[in-house]
Length: 399
Image 1 (cartoon, rainbow, N blue to C red):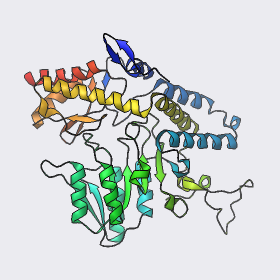
Image 2 (image 1 turned 90 degrees about the horizontal axis):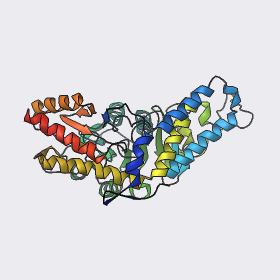
Image 3 (image 1 turned 120 degrees about the vertical axis):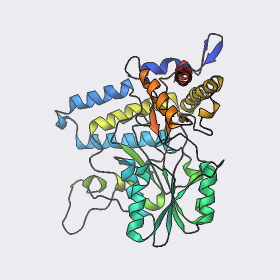
Image 4 (image 1 turned 45 degrees about the vertical axis):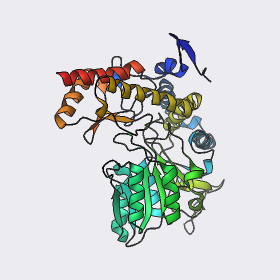
């Protein structure tokens, strides 16, 4: 483990803030602040992928038993890092869209019932529910914030006004600007209504803790290529115990079945599903490169620890907020944002265009979302980088 702090220029600075930047491979001269779209690449993750790809011309070198052991080792590693040490509840899937389609197939939903989402929710956690509603005659309804209201109060108000809600499917932090939802408040209300709780944690897992025991969700999903710093095409789905022995996967393939040592698949009766959430493992996602890259990413997350990652990223976004205030731009901050994810809030479309162009000229990479400029740093960024963002914004507005 890294030392917790070092003395630098008269102040104590987390050693992670000093050496983490060297762990990433990024173009020189570019300030990448779009981890909410794609996490910055760790050198160790790239190296692990290259090694696996270099070995791919000789697939016979790795036995089927060794490959399956690699899958299970990664499942245990993900569980230990993120999912309360519960590998039996984890499935390897290609995307959140896949995971949500699985959840939509399994949780009960009937005609005249509703699925509650957020206004502006990410499509991967919206489209499958809209489709399911069309199939059964249910309705998707959106929680919208009233003036001065946060997302938590908006969700609770929507739940109170719509007793027909059967499924509540939410993020922990909104993908537009990192605005947080208080799942400690929301989850017990959902349970008391008897609705299912489904969570897309793609914009929080890897920074914010997942409280499985407190929230008691039915399904949880998160992609691996954002805050988990892993490869594209390997995501994670946690499944509550009730679905592990009665849930129905959306595809049928051999790896999810226990065919025994004889590997027999008789025409009359399929082999039983493997135990735990393995019945939901998707076909084709557990190739050697993805497994190796994901394992390397988890190694780094475990070394840094999620608590320290969250604390350091909170320091970075707080530095940005403070710098905006110093430049006379307090209204450009996002109130109640997550420690790792925020957004600049231009008052007009013209201001948005001016600032977006100025940041791009400075090779500062942000993303425009819903009239905002999303800012999502990771550990490669520094406090001076965040002050620079505020300076570029202020200078651009001055003309």
